[in-house]
Image (cartoon, rainbow, N blue to C red; front, side):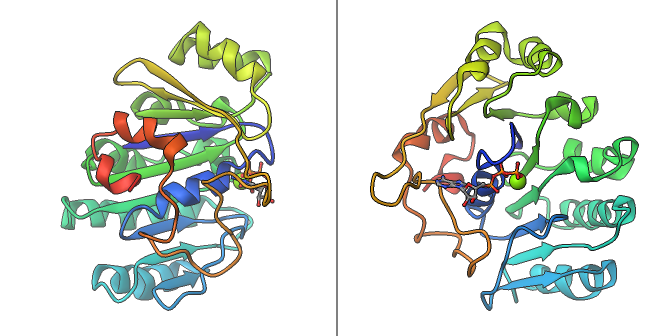
Amino acid sequence: MIWLIIGRRQRGKTTLATYMTRKSPQRVIFDPRGMIGSTGPRALRVETTRDLIDKAMPALADHEIDEVVYAPHDDDLTRPFTVLAGELKTWVSTYPTRPLGVLIDELSFIEQSRRDPPVMRRVLRSCEPAVFDVFITCHRPADIPTNTRSVADYWILFHCTQEHDLEVVKERCGSRAATMVQGLTGRSFIVWDDAQGKMTAYPDTPDPTTGRNTWYVELRGTITPSRGSVKPLADLSGIAQNSVDTGKLFQ
Ligand SMILES: Nc1ncnc2c1ncn2[C@@H]1O[C@H](COP(=O)(O)OP(=O)(O)OP(=O)(O)O)[C@@H](O)[C@H]1O
Ligand SMILES: [Mg+2]
């Protein structure tokens, strides 16, 4: 499945995307802002394309690790992104039925005309939706190329007010969704299920003691194991009900 996670700054997009990605038994995280730490023994953080190709992806394929965090420092992210897409293409063709969660954080860090290379287009169109989940975060719908928007299965929308953004939301998710996103507060969001044409609202319900929602994960701390340690989410179960692979993402 392809998930877009869109909204204004500091709403929790990266946190929610990380939470969801870590529901997959194995993950690849593209982290151009250096937001996501992974210090557990089953995770490997790499910063160069060479390490990604020679160390991280082979270790993931061999089950030596469960998570790759690729955090390139390059000013121009075109090559790192395209190389990553090439690795994903190889994965998809070599292991078409093997579950993988992919997080692309802040797509807008990649130059506009380079966000949709043919190799990534191929990955998004040829991956098996039941086992391969791609989560893409960004601030505005327009940050995401039309080709990518057109293959997205779910739109997760936080607060959004700009006229052009609302137009895009309205066009794809309907006028009710466009009206709702303008009124969202805090960390509340809606999920648009494109296949079913269905919208589900998720209110901001932080724990009164910790101030955290149930989908909170510590981004910079030690890695959260993929299953078991994250509390099952009663208030996100709607996504699971709409998903083909409910068992994998939200249990
Ligand atoms: N569910 C949550 N409950 C409580 N705090 C949260 C939750 N999710 C995120 N936060 C906190 O909110 C802040 C912003 O989170 P995050 O970086 O995920 O947001 P973002 O929308 O990706 O931000 P940006 O627009 O800068 O990319 C962080 O300090 C994070 O710890
Ligand atoms: Mg973010």
